[in-house]
Image (cartoon, rainbow, N blue to C red; front, side, top):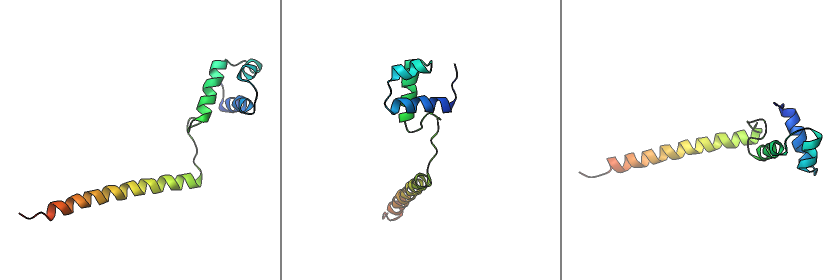
Length: 89
């Protein structure tokens, strides 16, 4: 059976608030194994929706990390070029 994301989030939040997996699974007619799987996904970076929406700060950090990686790559290339052209024949 397919469950929508709102339902998954609701039952996961019930377990996270202290109710037992067995009780919530029984009350909402969901397999305990399925519910535990949803709990693992909810704890992961991506979450239940499959793709995490990033906050503005997280997006800026991601952009800055990418820019830093590119700058380091350019630096390494330039270092190699300098060493090649500075060799005496």
